[in-house]
Length: 472
Ligand SMILES: Cc1cc2nc3c(=O)[nH]c(=O)nc-3n(C[C@H](O)[C@H](O)[C@H](O)COP(=O)(O)OP(=O)(O)OC[C@H]3O[C@@H](n4cnc5c(N)ncnc54)[C@H](O)[C@@H]3O)c2cc1C
Ligand SMILES: NC(=O)c1ccc[n+]([C@@H]2O[C@H](COP(=O)([O-])OP(=O)(O)OC[C@H]3O[C@@H](n4cnc5c(N)ncnc54)[C@H](O)[C@@H]3O)[C@@H](O)[C@H]2O)c1
Image (cartoon, rainbow, N blue to C red):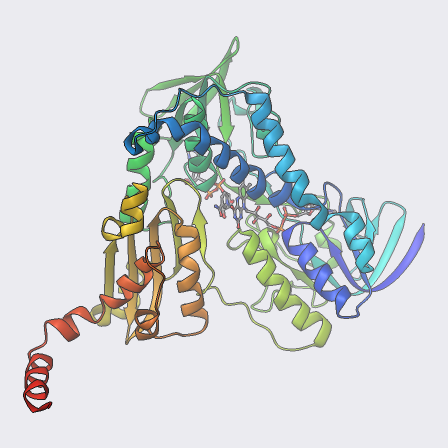
């Protein structure tokens, strides 16, 4: 057994753990990083990267559906699934060096490729290493949750961990769960030619503003995705190569493949949290506002910490932990400025309070600005006008924004900055955006705050007339 003493021990080399490791080692701390699986974690290997690469391939397959309107006729696509899979793997491989063991060792991090577990409050064992650290960061991520549906454990199902290795394109894909994973994959596989049915127990994209989610869901349905909402799966079974799902409503769905996209559970099993006095629940490791667990020397970040689950959130957590663990500075997590985006086409992006949340908080004093994408010249030229921006404003400052439309995930950054920097709506309205860009949507929706104040205001009109009379 090798004994190692270090300033910082990080468990998990995914989005969160790698960000802490890179920052801490470059600021002079001694860092040990333990990873039991692939460097890069879920995002690189089984999550964001493969899903976005697949969505990009699916957009190519969909091109003939829309190109005719531009006067360009494309032939019906022939989807060569093994090559689509190879494309996804190539994209992972192109990004992988940034997250690689070699890169981190080059930075000076000691990387150990083993499963880690606590043996005492300050010591962790990983393979033949026993590591004592001044501070420990748990960045162990999450895994797909499989709902307790009778028969489900006995049917061959896919998850985000196995989807990318599929031998053939599914003829009929059933998806259990209508969250971001379910809806992104539903559209991608439909565009490749699979018949796709999504079964959602509550509301699809249920975390999102219903009006905005409806724009996405209507579009997906128009592309041929079947989305069943408020439908509970009561049993699953296999008949030959087909999978049947029984629904509470009495319906039976049959598919060639089943993807489970029903939420996540934290990776805490086998970590020995109890030995270290670290409390956790079904949703994640308990942390305070500074991301400290019930063991003051141990932090938990990213998906393992049980809040929002995004790569950029794990990266933000990393910054908080570095501040606190390396410099002993006070650091608290805020979430009001953390954006999210679902990469369906159209995309759906959000930051801050939703309309409902903002109305609850500010009541009559809330103003909701709206601007439809159909008035944006670039969207018109690109024939992608399905979309809407909604901005919630209180006392002249934005408190939330939701955008549906092409590039919504990129457009939301303006509002993420506005919320984190407490920018006034007048500053966004005063920005000069290049014409013609989708980004003008942000300026226009902000400008609409002033429309009634300037253009429907008798005093302004009277002042204008007076000044005009007086001017030489
Ligand atoms: C299909 C899909 C698509 C997604 N798309 C997006 C997206 O577009 N944008 C976005 O922001 N987010 C997306 N996410 C979410 C994103 O992937 C996660 O929020 C992010 O990866 C969390 O980072 P993390 O560091 O907390 O965990 P992870 O990246 O999962 O890393 C945790 C690591 O810890 C390791 N580990 C666990 N236990 C141990 C142990 N005991 N010992 C040693 N190592 C251990 C694991 O092997 C893993 O490598 C997506 C997720 C999925 C599933
Ligand atoms: N674009 C992105 O940023 C992106 C993309 C994919 C995933 N993610 C992250 O990954 C996480 C997991 O995504 P997800 O879509 O698996 O989870 P989710 O929790 O967002 O959605 C799961 C859905 O499954 C439904 N469900 C659960 N059990 C069910 C059952 N028995 N029958 C029918 N429906 C059921 C839930 O009602 C919910 O709507 C998300 O929280 C998200 O943060 C992000």
